[in-house]
Figure 1 (cartoon, helix red, strand yellow):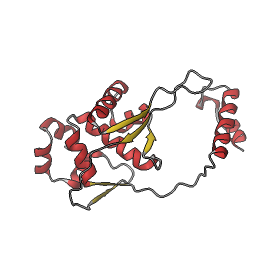
Figure 2 (cartoon, one colour):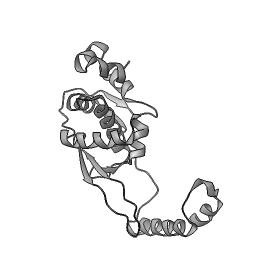
Figure 3 (tube, helix red, strand yellow):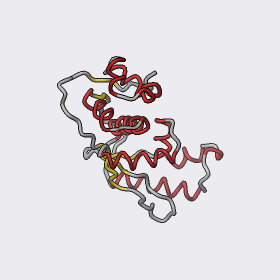
Figure 4 (tube, rainbow, N blue to C red):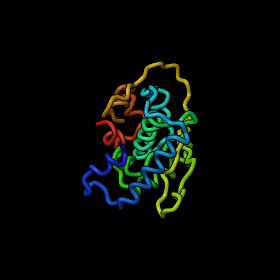
Length: 187
Protein backbone atom coordinates (compact mmCIF):
# COMPACT_ATOMS: atom_id res chain seq x y z
CA UNK A 1 0.00 0.00 0.00
CA UNK A 2 2.86 2.39 0.75
CA UNK A 3 4.41 1.65 -2.63
CA UNK A 4 1.11 2.38 -4.35
CA UNK A 5 0.77 5.63 -2.42
CA UNK A 6 4.30 6.61 -3.43
CA UNK A 7 3.51 5.90 -7.09
CA UNK A 8 0.61 8.38 -6.94
CA UNK A 9 2.81 11.21 -5.65
CA UNK A 10 3.79 13.92 -8.14
CA UNK A 11 7.42 13.42 -9.16
CA UNK A 12 8.30 17.07 -8.54
CA UNK A 13 7.79 16.51 -4.77
CA UNK A 14 10.96 14.44 -4.45
CA UNK A 15 14.36 14.05 -6.11
CA UNK A 16 15.10 10.43 -5.20
CA UNK A 17 15.05 7.71 -7.83
CA UNK A 18 12.22 5.18 -7.80
CA UNK A 19 14.68 2.50 -6.66
CA UNK A 20 15.80 4.68 -3.72
CA UNK A 21 12.18 5.25 -2.76
CA UNK A 22 11.45 1.52 -2.82
CA UNK A 23 14.56 0.85 -0.73
CA UNK A 24 13.49 3.46 1.85
CA UNK A 25 9.99 2.01 2.01
CA UNK A 26 11.39 -1.50 2.47
CA UNK A 27 13.79 -0.38 5.23
CA UNK A 28 11.08 1.60 7.01
CA UNK A 29 8.59 -1.26 7.00
CA UNK A 30 11.25 -3.71 8.15
CA UNK A 31 12.29 -1.36 10.98
CA UNK A 32 8.69 -0.93 12.15
CA UNK A 33 8.13 -4.70 12.30
CA UNK A 34 11.54 -5.43 13.85
CA UNK A 35 10.92 -2.86 16.64
CA UNK A 36 7.22 -3.75 16.93
CA UNK A 37 6.24 -0.10 16.54
CA UNK A 38 2.72 1.21 16.20
CA UNK A 39 1.34 4.37 14.67
CA UNK A 40 -0.61 5.23 17.78
CA UNK A 41 0.92 8.20 19.55
CA UNK A 42 0.75 8.11 23.31
CA UNK A 43 -0.41 11.26 25.07
CA UNK A 44 2.42 13.66 25.94
CA UNK A 45 2.89 16.28 28.61
CA UNK A 46 2.81 19.34 26.37
CA UNK A 47 3.32 21.93 29.06
CA UNK A 48 6.25 24.04 30.19
CA UNK A 49 6.72 24.62 33.90
CA UNK A 50 7.93 27.84 35.44
CA UNK A 51 11.05 25.99 36.65
CA UNK A 52 11.91 24.95 33.07
CA UNK A 53 11.52 28.41 31.54
CA UNK A 54 13.31 29.99 34.49
CA UNK A 55 16.22 27.58 33.98
CA UNK A 56 16.45 28.60 30.32
CA UNK A 57 16.38 32.30 31.22
CA UNK A 58 19.08 31.92 33.89
CA UNK A 59 21.36 29.36 32.18
CA UNK A 60 21.38 30.84 28.66
CA UNK A 61 23.05 34.25 28.59
CA UNK A 62 22.41 35.00 24.90
CA UNK A 63 19.10 35.65 23.13
CA UNK A 64 19.75 32.96 20.49
CA UNK A 65 20.61 30.44 23.18
CA UNK A 66 17.32 31.12 24.96
CA UNK A 67 15.36 30.77 21.72
CA UNK A 68 17.11 27.55 20.69
CA UNK A 69 16.88 26.01 24.17
CA UNK A 70 13.13 26.74 24.21
CA UNK A 71 12.69 25.20 20.73
CA UNK A 72 14.63 22.10 21.79
CA UNK A 73 12.64 21.81 25.02
CA UNK A 74 9.33 21.97 23.14
CA UNK A 75 10.52 19.45 20.56
CA UNK A 76 11.77 17.10 23.30
CA UNK A 77 8.39 17.21 25.03
CA UNK A 78 6.72 16.15 21.80
CA UNK A 79 9.17 13.56 20.53
CA UNK A 80 11.66 12.32 23.18
CA UNK A 81 11.73 8.64 24.00
CA UNK A 82 11.54 7.23 27.51
CA UNK A 83 15.25 7.95 27.99
CA UNK A 84 14.73 11.62 27.07
CA UNK A 85 16.60 11.32 23.77
CA UNK A 86 15.17 12.98 20.67
CA UNK A 87 16.37 14.24 17.33
CA UNK A 88 15.71 17.54 15.67
CA UNK A 89 17.20 18.44 12.32
CA UNK A 90 18.83 21.82 11.65
CA UNK A 91 16.03 22.85 9.28
CA UNK A 92 13.47 22.39 12.08
CA UNK A 93 15.66 24.40 14.45
CA UNK A 94 15.98 27.17 11.84
CA UNK A 95 12.22 27.29 11.37
CA UNK A 96 11.52 27.29 15.10
CA UNK A 97 14.02 30.02 15.95
CA UNK A 98 14.42 32.13 12.81
CA UNK A 99 18.20 31.67 12.94
CA UNK A 100 20.38 30.58 10.06
CA UNK A 101 21.93 27.11 10.05
CA UNK A 102 25.43 28.27 11.00
CA UNK A 103 24.07 30.13 14.02
CA UNK A 104 22.03 27.10 15.06
CA UNK A 105 25.10 24.87 14.78
CA UNK A 106 27.22 27.30 16.81
CA UNK A 107 24.56 27.76 19.49
CA UNK A 108 24.09 23.99 19.87
CA UNK A 109 27.75 23.72 20.84
CA UNK A 110 27.28 26.60 23.29
CA UNK A 111 24.18 25.00 24.83
CA UNK A 112 26.11 21.79 25.32
CA UNK A 113 28.95 23.71 27.01
CA UNK A 114 26.41 25.46 29.27
CA UNK A 115 24.92 22.11 30.33
CA UNK A 116 21.51 22.83 28.80
CA UNK A 117 21.63 19.91 26.36
CA UNK A 118 23.64 16.76 25.83
CA UNK A 119 24.51 15.82 22.28
CA UNK A 120 24.02 12.07 22.53
CA UNK A 121 25.05 11.17 18.96
CA UNK A 122 26.31 13.17 16.00
CA UNK A 123 27.75 12.64 12.55
CA UNK A 124 26.49 9.08 12.23
CA UNK A 125 26.61 7.78 8.67
CA UNK A 126 23.56 6.18 7.12
CA UNK A 127 24.37 2.67 6.03
CA UNK A 128 25.10 2.42 2.32
CA UNK A 129 24.91 6.17 1.60
CA UNK A 130 26.94 9.33 2.00
CA UNK A 131 24.09 10.88 3.99
CA UNK A 132 24.22 11.45 7.74
CA UNK A 133 21.62 10.58 10.35
CA UNK A 134 20.23 13.42 12.43
CA UNK A 135 21.98 14.28 15.67
CA UNK A 136 20.39 13.03 18.88
CA UNK A 137 19.96 15.26 21.92
CA UNK A 138 18.81 15.13 25.54
CA UNK A 139 17.71 18.15 27.59
CA UNK A 140 19.90 18.56 30.68
CA UNK A 141 18.59 21.85 32.06
CA UNK A 142 19.37 22.34 35.73
CA UNK A 143 15.76 22.76 36.80
CA UNK A 144 15.24 23.83 40.41
CA UNK A 145 11.91 23.34 42.09
CA UNK A 146 10.80 26.88 42.79
CA UNK A 147 7.49 25.90 44.31
CA UNK A 148 5.30 27.08 41.46
CA UNK A 149 2.89 24.65 39.89
CA UNK A 150 1.82 27.01 37.14
CA UNK A 151 2.07 25.39 33.68
CA UNK A 152 2.13 26.89 30.21
CA UNK A 153 0.19 24.81 27.65
CA UNK A 154 1.96 24.26 24.34
CA UNK A 155 -0.86 24.80 21.93
CA UNK A 156 0.08 25.20 18.28
CA UNK A 157 1.95 28.41 17.58
CA UNK A 158 2.81 29.29 21.20
CA UNK A 159 6.25 30.87 21.11
CA UNK A 160 8.88 31.91 23.64
CA UNK A 161 7.47 35.42 23.87
CA UNK A 162 4.04 34.11 24.93
CA UNK A 163 5.64 31.76 27.43
CA UNK A 164 7.73 34.54 28.99
CA UNK A 165 4.71 36.84 29.24
CA UNK A 166 2.72 34.03 30.86
CA UNK A 167 5.23 33.41 33.67
CA UNK A 168 6.71 36.87 34.23
CA UNK A 169 5.42 40.40 34.33
CA UNK A 170 7.15 43.16 32.40
CA UNK A 171 9.14 44.40 35.40
CA UNK A 172 10.48 40.92 36.21
CA UNK A 173 11.52 40.33 32.60
CA UNK A 174 13.32 43.66 32.41
CA UNK A 175 15.27 42.70 35.53
CA UNK A 176 16.09 39.19 34.29
CA UNK A 177 17.23 39.87 30.75
CA UNK A 178 19.16 42.71 29.08
CA UNK A 179 17.16 45.41 27.26
CA UNK A 180 18.11 44.23 23.75
CA UNK A 181 17.10 40.68 24.57
CA UNK A 182 13.84 41.96 26.02
CA UNK A 183 13.18 43.95 22.84
CA UNK A 184 13.98 40.93 20.64
CA UNK A 185 12.26 38.22 22.66
CA UNK A 186 9.30 39.91 24.31
CA UNK A 187 8.39 43.27 22.81
